[in-house]
Length: 83
Image (cartoon, rainbow, N blue to C red; front, side):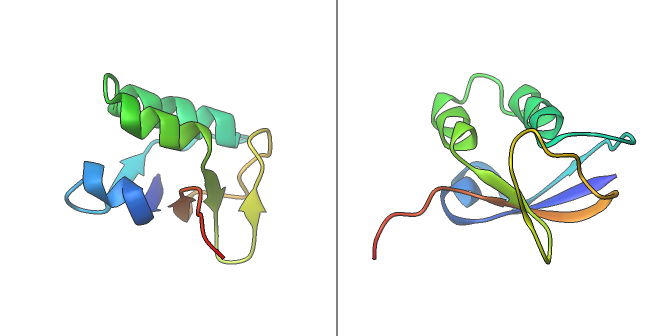
């Protein structure tokens, strides 16, 4: 199981600020994002954010093609503007 903590604008789409997904060995970030897309199907604003977001754990920000290290807790980080 993967537990995603939702941050920033993603919180507007889910009251609990968390999302649980199935994990399979060798799973990539793209596969996680596909599961998320199914969960939020039809919510175009969310899906646009998702396309520009990153998945992270406590020590690493993952690129879309990277494999996850293990099941567990991850963060879904939206794009950030400012400076």
